[in-house]
Image 1 (cartoon, rainbow, N blue to C red):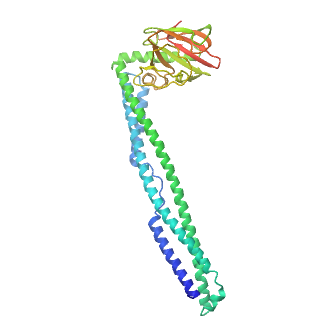
Image 2 (cartoon, rainbow, N blue to C red; image 1 turned 180 degrees about the vertical axis):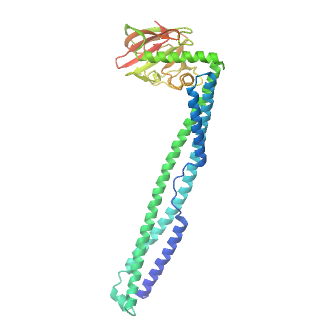
Image 3 (cartoon, helix red, strand yellow; image 1 turned 90 degrees about the vertical axis):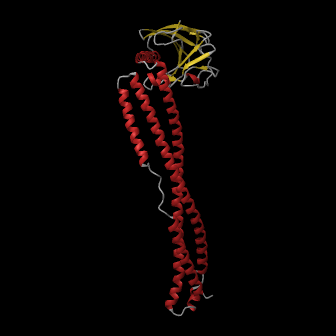
Length: 396
């Protein structure tokens, strides 16, 4: 085959590849997909969430009554359910976007990889033909115009190959970046799924809170107001005690296990029944006592909250068997009576002994503070490492 025919053949081959490439890109290179935005349904749900939140805020600002508290709880349940619906919708939309985009990206990447291999082979072949000396081309040419035409065939093919390779590689890079974006969307789905689990847990707790409120108050406004007043009075008293308030006197040093008081049996100021309220502060900051008390088997009588664990090394302030009536943090009781505030200690009771013992060595202080028309009695022990422990509803 003459040099001219070889060049013609290569040019036609490159032209065929060019047409083939454009056909593939026209089929596969649809507009670069972008992450799905919130659908109109999600936006509508968000609007409902905002409206309901405003309604709850208005109810919170009203005078607290049993009916208003139940209304708040009912709306809070609806609010959480809307959040669950919105989150589920976002997860579904993102899942569909990710699935569609991944299929397009994978198909396009496979096509581009094959195409890149073909084009690289063509560049090598084209350059090999390009090593033919111009003199040989001249000998096979009929005239000067024909000579320059033949030489330009190869140059055109080489330039086209290089541009096509660059465009193809750039397309691959663009879709690789897009795939990374959708990987981020997958991570967002995982975050939404965790959020969804939290909302479902919250919804169950809110339903239990309402049930507990109706049981405790017997759906009676007078009972609710009485318990609300007592709870808020106790909350204020505890805040004052842990801030150094109350009538406090030093009672000397104590060793771990020494008796610092005894649980008051029955009702007492700001206490609806026999229990020890045990509280821990470290550097004047509230702590969850469960992280200091040693792990042991206890009876959880704090429905609807349920059990929790203990992970510390301290001996307990009361004897076995121990019954837990309220834990630390957001509890059914605190959610109802503390306007969503937290219960700052652990309430416990022993049926075998009323003795209350210090959990560590320290300096003992005994005190009292006005609460609910009487005096709430307590003990405090200051320990050597800036930790304080408090023992409420006990007498010396």
